[in-house]
Image 1 (tube, protein in one colour):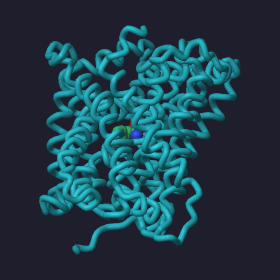
Image 2 (tube, helix red, strand yellow):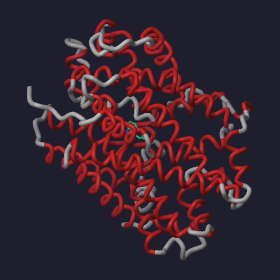
Image 3 (cartoon, rainbow, N blue to C red):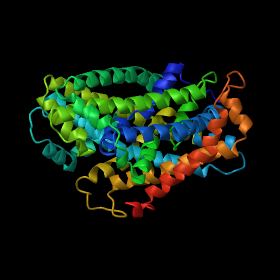
Image 4 (cartoon, rainbow, N blue to C red):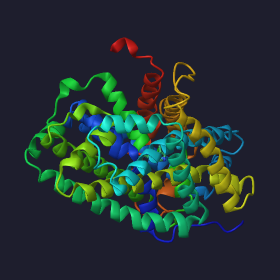
Length: 449
Ligand code: TRP
């Protein structure tokens, strides 16, 4: 067998995997969802989802990846011989490229804002919704930043697993944590900050409708990078001595911690400056820049904030790209550079189309959605939950339970006390709840509204 890359250290492996999980999902979406959907009650439901389906499905992907040390296609061939499951690798690759395409448009906005923050453009305006509107609808600026972001993504990918991915994660993840804590402290020190904390943490169970609960499950999936063999691919680079259960729990804990901290970083400041927390997606591009504009030290804070977002997002797009790069290099036998290039070119073409859907292509609609929305909808609402069902059924029902136990215990060297509950979640709880998410994504529960 050709020698295959491995993460050098366990810390490196966890940093990279947390880097994948921590992204726009945590810093952009989670705080806003929490804010409008019942505060602590939403967080409670979210934690439950992470526990009963998030962690089990992470473990499922880890078992398949680390057992085989292969890309998704090779891994499925080996784990389920004779079952012709490799069609599923096509689902993973297509879905991951769709996600990169719309995700990198938002990453492009982050780069533009970073640029504006540095060049003084952000400080020089007072109408932030006009700034945002003008920018996203301009015919070329969104495209330019999307392409630039994907190029940066490529530069890391082509350096390979250790010198590119692992090294970047080892630097960026600790830095991201430090910055996040600095922002939380700063936010908490603003006058009236306590209102933001109350807003975020006071439980309002009446705000929890079935819609919100199922939305929380979908959010857990996206935030943990589940269902599309992203974690399978990373775990195929884990060492045989790593404890898969410990790694899975660490990743889930750190990812959730970052999401909650992101809320603490945002809401106290939002309340302190008399802004509305329900701004949703606009929170980060319109509300926060306005706040930085009034804060002492706002110039530097704005730069650091968009830099933090940049680090969170590039470690995620790298992990999405690695799914197809591992496939291209191991199944199609392309070298690392060519595989990265192929991934980048496809993402640039589709990403450009997504970026244009805020401008010249805003009238181009399929099923009533722009390309940006369509890619988001298809991947997040359909392909992701399908993938989650696939992995929980594969490891819960198809793969021999002795193999699962053997892999989780590192061939009997570790004691795994949670095998039974884990298997129960994988066989029953996860598939059932994910089917709910899936039907919800298709709009089957519209009548509950
Ligand atoms: N988890 C990342 C976020 O929260 C996004 C992400 C990275 C992802 N890799 C993925 C989502 C694979 C689904 C599948 O932003």
